[in-house]
Image (cartoon, rainbow, N blue to C red):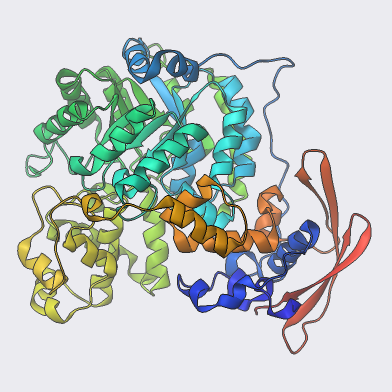
Length: 631
Ligand code: 3PY
Ligand code: ZN
C-alpha cells in the first residue's frame, strides 16, 4: 500500500500537478492515516533531500550562520501602542488620534509586502515569529505592521504548505500592542478574481476576529463600486477601513491626462463618502515622483478630512525623496521596511528614511538603533531565501516607462522564462507598457496587472502588435485572464474598454457591466463545510471553509499534503527547502517541550522503480523510509 499512496505519487511532491490533478487522481486520498508524525516528517525530509524543494532540483544544503536575534532586556514588557488606541476608541477615534500626531508615523511592511516584492512571498511563519516579539517590544511606536493579505494567503497554502490563519494567530500572540494591517483586494479578497459578496464579508469577519485591525482595501481598476462591499464589511467589524487609490500614470506629465489630480481627489472624496476611515495612496509600482507626492497629498488633505497613508515601492530608488515631499505636504503615515528587506521593488528603508528626516519637525519617533538590530535578523533570514530573489541589483528607473508593480516584476520574469521568452525580457517590458496603452491606459495592480502581463507575453510570443491584434483578433485564442477582463468580470475600467479590441477578444461570449458580485450567487457555507468534511473525512474549521471557498483546489491540495506530511512549519527554513545533509543531526521542536532528534545516516541506491531507501536515526532509533528519486 505504501507505494501507491499519495506521498509517493511522483507528481505530488514535485508540484507537477495542474489544478485538475486532484480531480483526476482520486487515489491521492487513499493514503494511510495511521502514519505517525515522525514518519510523515521524515518522508518530507527524505524526498526533499533527494529531489530538492518543490521539484526545483536538488541543491547542496548551504551552511548558514545562526540568525542574530536582538537581545531583549530582562523583564522588558510590551508598551501600549496603536492597538490599544483602536480597542479603546474605535476606528474613528484612531483616525482622529492619527490626524493629531505631529510626527509622521510608520507602517512596517517587512512581514508582508517587502518579502512579497523581494522574495516571491516565500518567508515562512517560523522566520516571522522569531522576530515578532522583538519587533513589537523594540518598535512600539509603529502605526502598524503589515503582515497579511496580498499574496501571502495563497502562497502560504500553495508553496509553503502552511496555514495563513495560524500565522495570524501566532503573530498576534507575540505582537499584542501594534495594529495588524492586511492588504485586501476588495471583491477579489486575497485572490485573483471577483468573489460573491458573502465570501468577502465572511473573510473579513473571520480575519477581524483572528486579529486583523486595519484593512487596506483597493480595487484593481480603482472601481469604487467594487470596493464598497469590502468597506462595509470592515466597518461592520468595527475595524479600520483604509480605502486606497491605486496611483497610475503621472500627475506631473501634462500629456497623461487620464489620471490627473482631479481624478484622485474625486476618488478620495467618494471613498470618504463610502465610509473610509483612512485614505491610502497605493503606489504599487513606485511611479509617484517626489513633487507629484507633494501635490497629491496636499490636494487630498484639502479635499478630505481623513488621515492619509502613503505606500510606495522603491524600485526607481526615489522612494525616500517621495516620502520627504509627502511629509512636507502633511502625509500622516508612510510604509517602510527593515533595511535589509527594503529598497528596489520593496518599500524604502525605515532607517534611511529616519536619517533623511534628521532635524526635521516631523521626524518619526522610532529608535533607529532598534530598527538596525532587527535588520540584522532580516539580513540573516534573507540569505536563506536567495533562490527566490529577482536578480534586480540596482535602482531601476525604467519602471517609469513600463509601470510594472513591484510585486509583479520578478513574477512576470519567471513567467517569461517559463514560456521561453527569458531572452526577450526587454521586449516584454516594452510590450507591457504598449498593452497598457492598447487597453486604454488601465490601472495595473493585482489582478489587472496580471491581465496586462499575460497579454504582453502573448503578444511577444506570437509576434503581434496593436494593429495585428485587432486584424487577426477573431482567430486568436487570447489568454483566459484577458478574456475575463474584457468580459467585465474584474469590473469596469475607468473610461471603459476600447470597443473594437473588446469585441475581438470577447467574440460571442457574454459581457457584463454590473458589479460581478451582484451576479455571483452567494456561497452556502454550511453546504461547503459538509462537502469539505466529507472530502477530508474529519472536522474542519471555519477558517478552512473560507480558504476552501476562495481556493478550492489549492486548499484541498494543502490539506492532503498536511495529512501526508504533517505540520512542516516546525522545520527550519534550510531543512524545509533543502532537506538534510549526510550525517547531519537536527532538532525539531514539534510542540512546546517536545523535540525530535533526527540524523540522516545513509541513502540507498535507487532501484529500477526509482525508489531509494533513506536511513535515519530518529531519537536514537534506526528508521527507514522509501523515497522516489525523480531524476
Ligand atoms: C497585492 O495585491 O498582492 C499587491 O501587493 C498589489 O500591489
Ligand atoms: Zn505594495
